[in-house]
Length: 561
Image (cartoon, rainbow, N blue to C red; front, side, top):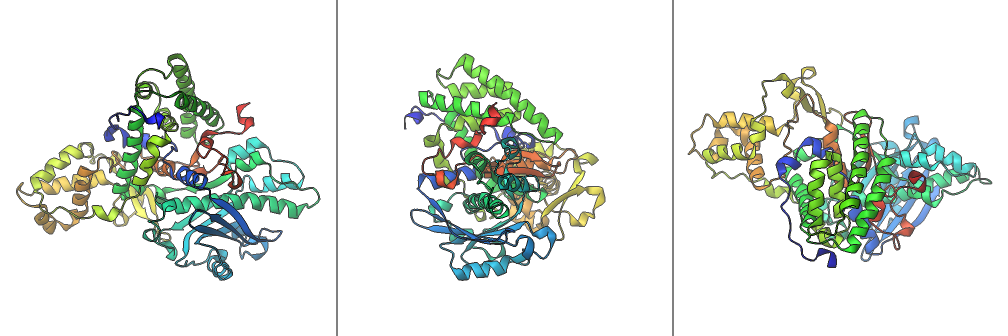
């Protein structure tokens, strides 16, 4: 472990700087992101992916099975596609339902899943079913791929790079949803110890299905002229996803999890900054990834004005970072800390957060163990400390929530928005407050709740216990519990007003998706963002020999021209 010699962990960044919406909306995938964790597991433990079943007709209807075999267990993806002939509605004919099954999928599993997921109806999964993903063909690329291959050619690599997927997910259900296996059932399995590993394995296998489906349809359309998708365009196809406001309150609703994920990421950055020296190999890897990142950003496009400006600023940031490293090198003492301090003063938030990811990349031996700490039992944070005195609670609010108490909620702009639950799906939605009945409001505004708690505490003597207080004011119980939790968990709260007129749900979405391992954030509005997973990642038959981490910034040769 030469790269981790002489480690003296630097201080973590102040949560008051980290947990701001503008910074959260600038996060990038890093070594700790869950898609990268899964790919390292697959490659490092010698997993193999097989396709024992392919029963798909010339419209795309049918069933395919992919089995991932590891050192101790195997998992099967059962992909069920209605195709043009079997779908009851035109809008469903390009969909596919994919279920990850624990173990080898038997014929009765296939029949059961075919019936369960047919045409997108009411679905109930079984005890062996780990994840259900519904996906749809890309309207921008799928047909282009099939047409090009059927004619005997290859698709334009620039177009493949720009879109990035043949299938995009439209829903993901796991961890007990729709009857799937609960996470507690899988927590002792090494391959699923980190968060969201079931979902990440499912997406990786869907990626394999998507490119095989493109090849198959081209061959069935023109058997005499069709060719298979080449390695480079195949590698540049990931799995797409479009995420909206339903995911936006994730960190608001899961403060313990937020504290753990952000705290672990800050610990990883602090460990690298604490290194006294950078080895020759670490410097080489950093330079390589920086060059790849510059090409990656140059090929990253977005039609959303805000994201387009951020990409342009990031492109400039990386050019200046490259020039700075070239001029100053990384051979002095504490080189990463010095580089980070320079970046904090010279780079945009987007550039700073990509720099954080870049400096972690060469140090798997130093930071990868932190992944084991990212799973958290949120039930552990639910108990309220009733023995605390109201005076101590009041002091706690002034110390931990000074940012929230400073917000002027008498200003209409400070309460311009309202969070509510969609009547059909139950997912969170955001609307102008004036347009909805306030009875529909969901509690997604910790800052406002803290101020209400502070006003209630003003009516109570300091020596009253919290238990007595919440008996008198039971509606304040949740805010009290959250405040006590925030005292112990520094990264638990997003330190901004989530009702403000200037709120961008995109910032909340970006933070969650970056931890998941998404890349190429492309907002379609202020509330929806398109991303890709595994774009550029090694293919299933390359896992044994490929770099399981170096792919993240890689771009095809055309992007470097």
